[in-house]
Image 1 (cartoon, rainbow, N blue to C red):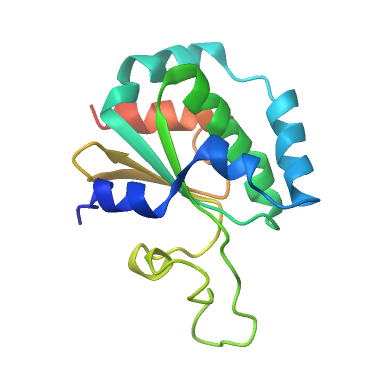
Image 2 (spheres, rainbow, N blue to C red):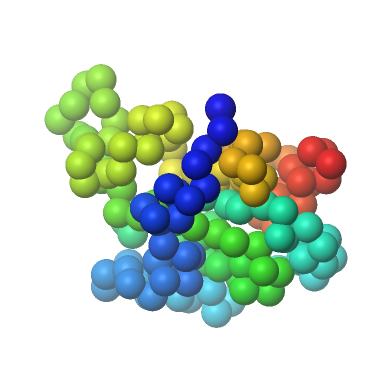
Length: 157
């Protein structure tokens, strides 16, 4: 399945804008992680070399603790490497629905189309819109998010 990158850009916001517009008190957790995280410089250098060929589409919610850990790291990666990171924010759980996990609206329809189960969901796509990898909640292949993203890109080249 190929994603329409132009449509995704219309429906999402850049990661830094997403963090900047979060409501309090959630915003402070995201900003604290942004201030204190020390990324792996080698992984960032590797990402910088291929940043123009990829985009990360992330699904997030202000109330999600795992999002407060991962989304600020994506902001650092984007800022230091030029890798575009777009965020579908404001996801809402549907606590009353038994068949549906996310309430749509206000959650975007893409949570169904892209089979979002847990968040943060970070989908790495190439500039043609082809999905090349997913990270659900946290890295599982490498110790850090930037290393895992670099690994996904390397394994697809």
